[in-house]
Length: 557
Image (tube, rainbow, N blue to C red):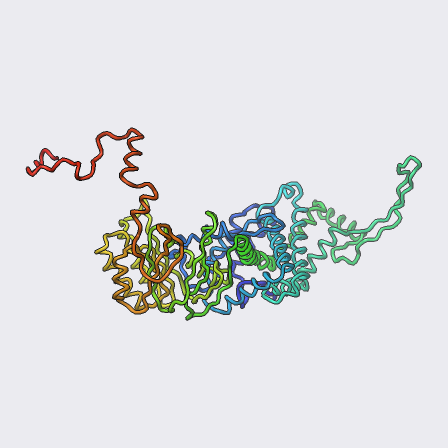
């Protein structure tokens, strides 16, 4: 039994549909192209038991954007594609066992500390990617000479196994499994069968010639001096035996070429080795998991942003120093902030003006938890995180064409789903809770949510723009362990830092002035466009007095 080079789990597993993958590999070996189908087969929907549900956080945390922009792999300066579906599956199903998280962190630590091993791992990714590419979309040469294409594919598979066996024997982390698995393959009957075929293809015989060259530099005579056939190869057949075989086949009325015979042997060899090709190709996604994390680390460090491997335990408080939102790197340099020293049972309420950084902070916390619990680098200088059994992220609802409820109704259904699903070990991130209704009605809903969260004690962070209500909560907290953070302002601009307390103002008027949304500026804009059909109403002092006579409903209609 060949060991599975699983780099993600302490207990190795083949998390693929082996039968379906074997069929797809056979189609590729026969010369068929099925790239997207093969990519999907290498990204199983479930990597193991998980309580995490993608629909509760995938869209709100923009996980696909993070993978596309931040988790990339380059080999020798060339950016190679990664299986994004596989990365999404891994990141959206973080392990709940500390040993698995530390198992993955150990791999990153070894790659980080050994540039030589990191370079070898990148090279192996390139070799496996090339092997997968041959199966996905055979090159044009396959149409001209299918036999040579198949032999090239087998040669590449053998070369990859040999590279794995020779270069990873000194690794101390799970990367040591690469060498162990390859060595086991090399000792297998199937590998010896493959080696013999390739040796026979490359070395049927050695011919020695003697040349006689004239004074003009041209060959005068070419004489064969010696023939050494590769008689030790198990595929070797002596000349008399070959002649007899051909005569016997012809006598029985069969007509086929030597090329057809070779093709049959090549297909037989492939069927022998296909069992160990499956775990090798599974490893391609595992390598992308680590190498894309190294790429993310290098990009952050190049911009002066620190990343770290988190310290995790079931009851750890949420502590993040110099946390930043990696999604903001496409817009410039993110401003790090710190969340630390919080009671593990605290529910945090964040207040502050629009565009102050509240929503981005929630995203950063959610991504930090996803990456940290997956065993990858956290976008922070130091991170201490609880182990949670899922994230429930609720952002300000955007209207959909087919939604049946209004904005408030949609949010209320979301709240109902929240309490139908979460437990005491969940993380809850709610942005602008109950912003779809007036404050007096929202207060009752807000209090209900707080009381229910207080009874469950999840890791919860809620943002709100109801500042008066926030101050009332701070003065008379309805539940224990309620904490408040406010956006720190520098005059009328946000510093994207957070301090204890409730924000004194939302700065709505100042923001409107800064963005040019005032009566004077908008009136001038309309008049410049010549779009005014009647004079704009002036301030109350200039408006004509209203008539005290009751309005005629018919006329008014």
